[in-house]
Length: 244
Image (tube, rainbow, N blue to C red; front, top):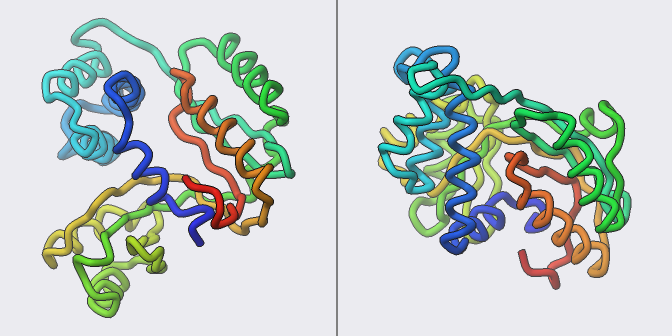
């Protein structure tokens, strides 16, 4: 299961240096701008509430969050971004799904195509791999903070679909519509949440060897380094020998 655990990605993000952290904040700010276009009050705008929670988890400064909201509502001038999904293949036939926020598609697509080609993959046509993923809420809880039985009881009663034991953490899987209820139920039960996000999960995974895994991780790093890329999902089952 470690090959596609979102905990591994969370750990890598937490260990990011200051330059990387600044880039993470910039990416979240774009999400806030888009969400705030539907209203700047998180009590009435659930999507904005999700993103503000994400911003706080990333230790994003309060004034930066507020400025992004103001840009989204038009109070500080309009910044127009659109959500675009890109699809492709990594070495070994691994399916890649990319969520991006861009203000210039003519810039983003060629940039991502070049990144794929440099790392032995290729950008594919829309619809090529998207059907292999499902959008889900993922909530990570450190395994030493709660028993599996207790977590199962609370999470499933709140509407979660599954609870996976990833050794270091439990990953609670929920649909996007039940994500907030499950998260709030965990909080009410005093179960500490390490991280939570709505992302694309693979319907099935494919095992790959060490060489392909190393190439995949280099490709993911390069894609995530793009200012326009918000998240990268894949369907590979990485070998235990490859650290993530």
